[in-house]
Amino acid sequence: MTGTARQIVDATIMAYRSTFRELGVILAFVVLFPVGFLFFLGLIVRPQLQTQVLVGSMMMEMALLNVNVLAQTIGNDKRSKLWELWVSLPVRPTVYVVSNALTLLPFSLLATVVTLGLGAVYFGITLSSLALLFLVPAFLVIWASTLGIGFLIGVYGGPPRRINTIAQFVGIVMTFFAPIFYPLSALPTVLQYVAGIWPLTWGELLLVDLIRGALAEAGIAAAVLGGFTVVWFVLIGAGLRWRET
Image (tube, rainbow, N blue to C red; front, top):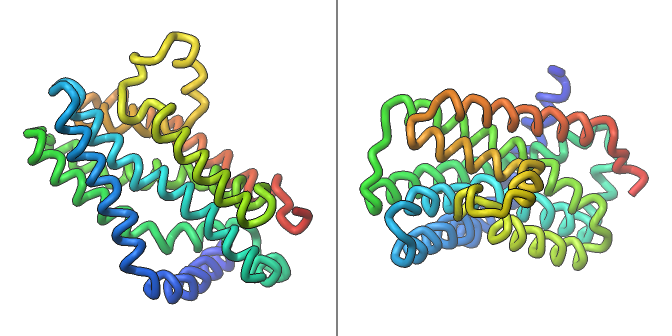
């Protein structure tokens, strides 16, 4: 475990160099796009759904962009032949996945906190001290619970162009067909059960419950997301043999 953690730190530091070269694009993508959704949808929805719009905007930053960027990073590495270098090294897939995801995490986390503050002021939402205490850990567990989706797309999506296409398609599906910008109850009963297999659904429930002060329900959602995280890391680290793809 110590060796793996050290490899993740070293790989993340290396990955940050390329991240800072594209910092302007990253900040525009991570901050402006979700905040634009926040203000646009906030103008057209009923007041009862404004909390949902705020949650959806934050989910874009902590989950949707995480999936998309990780998948496309793997696709770009395949195009530039960095993928062959990584798979030839004596490191586990978890080192590669986590280090690449960590390069975006500080910007996503900062953007999410900014969006939360802007949305709370814009919609007049009052946040309790307990909600503020648990929101950042909630963002992190949402982030961790979606890493496997980006990894699956990047590793098994085929050529880089196809990976980008699949990542964009999955991002659209998760944005508009997963219950993040609208409540789960808006879906037909059958689709509500289907939505239960998406970590994004549980992420939405977690954030809504925290904002509304329903800590017991938020704890259940957090536990489910923790389960998703464990499953993804088991599959990434052991069950998915990336050298054979």
